[in-house]
Length: 475
Image 1: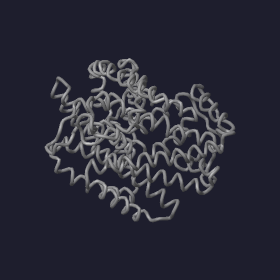
Image 2 (image 1 turned 90 degrees about the horizontal axis):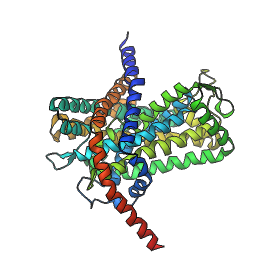
Image 3 (image 1 turned 180 degrees about the vertical axis):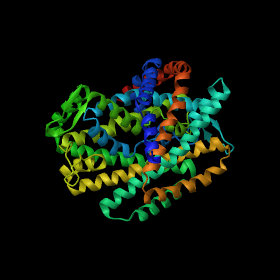
Image 4 (image 1 turned 135 degrees about the horizontal axis):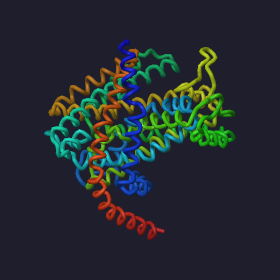
């Protein structure tokens, strides 16, 4: 077997049914262990997230505001998976895959809450006085068996560094460069140079500079894409009922064939479940532990409070952004079309572009390309911080962070100008392997977190009543 075939075989095992079952199973376990509190507090947490207070650093200790911490985490999770991943899932698993993405996200909310809350509970400070946390610290400081804790913490950090250069950097830069070249004819080396320069300029200031950019870029690009997707759905509104019917019918049918707006897609419930779960996890990263690294930098007075804010990221990423992509495709009539040149089904970014073009013409293709550029670039920025803190955990000295930032930016140029089949597969494996030590710690600490969460609920309930009373008085 060639190196590519070997890596592909390993990748299929790492991201196979056992891993997906472990990811979803952990989410189900935590949802019940936490008495459904993440679900019960979701909408109030969204209100808190967008409040004026969440943008301030007055409550507790930390490096950046709770809002900035989530936006920096979202910078890494809202990426090409929201555009390309959804389209791929709906072709490979049928329109019903979207339902399974929702299900994975529902339990992923509990997982994201748990990993982020624990990251803050067990965070520490480095020699520069900056917050340092994430699953590697959670594992190291909470496991009674110190040898196991040190090994699993090291492995998580190592896989995080590897994944940051691949999934979080080179593949994203490659997506930007190729889409810009296809749409606008700009050489890939020019795009690579621009990405590298912008990345270095932003990363010079560390987490505070990164968070400032993310706090503007992430909401801006999300709103931009959401408005465009809603426009496509509204202008194709006559097809939406049929599209929704196929999404739900094919999600639970043993074997189904989509007709009408579904084209010629043939899928089974199992394939829809597989691709829906896989693309959902790839998109929101719940269970991988990456977002917990950024969550640890938040200014907060209680780890459960910030856990509630960070879990909103899964809702925004999958329930909102991915859903809009899926509905835009389902209502546009392009699902199941074939490329005349190759005779193959149109999928990935090309499918999303085709959906947007149905009502917006060539302009729709430009919008999707711009969306890919913004989403992918934000992923590069967010993953840089993940990799930087993971490297700091391994080498113990923050001074190496500055070297990492420069090297990381240079790798973006390499990614933009090189074919990345092997690099993608290798980093995809590392990305999946991050989940194993993280999920072990979440299961092991489920009882500890449940106790903290139930106790904090008394505080949260008082705050809810105070806000409700204030709103009533204002009326």
